[in-house]
Image (tube, rainbow, N blue to C red; front, side):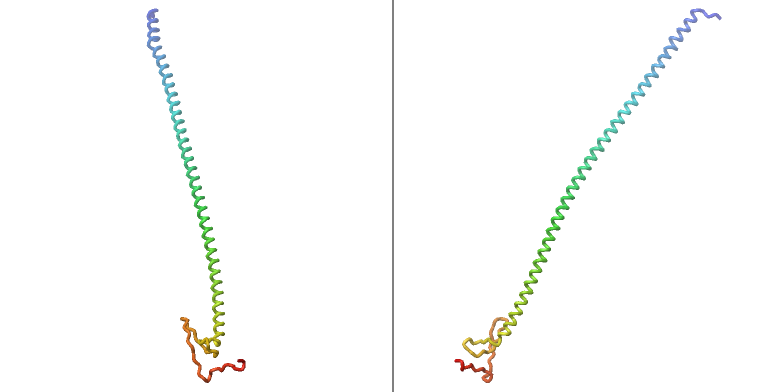
Length: 168
């Protein structure tokens, strides 16, 4: 078996043309697949980063909304506390004035009762000196009813008191 130069060249051509091209094609495809995988990973990482950024922005907006709601609720609570304190103060002042008025009315009532009792004692003390007949010097006992009607009680002649003529 002799191998001729032509056979060797044919074999080299076959290997270089068929096998060499396949080797270079295989290497090219491998590098291309690797580059596409890296690009896909970069795109996926970029998409994840965008997703995280959107989540952070949404969380930030929601947090700001919550802060605003909390501050509004605090302001409303403070307003209602202020109103409650004002109403409480007004009620306390009203109660104090009512108690003051009540004490004053009780004092006036007690004074009036004392005055009425004193006037009643004066009227009782003056009763012997009352006479229904203004021209009469003999004092006849009269009774003044609740209606203001005057009733005279006539004394008998025996009990009549004679005026003292000595002084006349």
